[in-house]
Length: 188
Image (tube, rainbow, N blue to C red; front, top):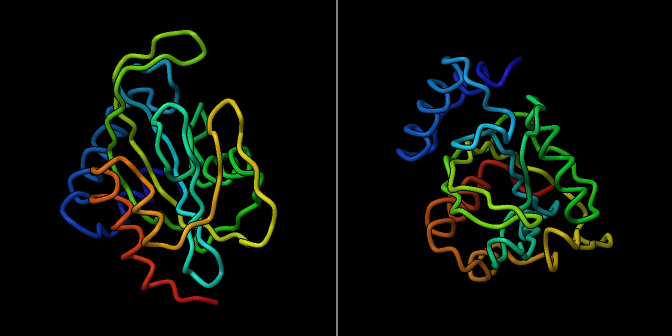
C-alpha cells in the first residue's frame, strides 16, 4: 500500500486529524515533491509514540532545536515508507530497537516549524506533514542520545511525558491525543 492509500483509509480521531488528513491527501494528489527537504515549504516526516509493553511509559528525547522533551522521529528524506522512517529514527535517536504495535498510521498532524539554524545553515519556517506510528520497546534496555540532535533520552510515565514537554500546542493537541488513543491498544 502507499501512503496515499493509507491516508485515505485512515479514520481521523478528531477534528484536527480530519482537517490534516484532508490536506495531506490533497498535497499528495498534486504530485508535488513532498518526501524531500528540498521542498522548503512543506515535507513529510514520521514520528513515533514509543511505549513500553505495559503501556504506562513513553520514550522521549530532549531535542536540541526545540529545547524540549519530545517524541522521536525525523524527515522522510526520499523514503515513502514512513513506518520504516519512524523505526529508523527511533533507533538512531535513542539506540532502542522498537517494533510496531500496528503497521497502521496511529496519528496525523501538520506541524509548524519556525526558522532555525541547523549545521550552520538557516532553515526557513515550514510545515511538517507528519505521520505518527505507535511503536513498542522494552523499557529495561539501555538507551542513549544522538548527540547532534538530542541532549538526553528517557522513559517517562504517560502523564509525566506531557508535563516534561515545554511545547504547549504539542502537549494539548498531540501528546494528549496519543495517550488517549492508547486505550485501544491494551498492555501486553
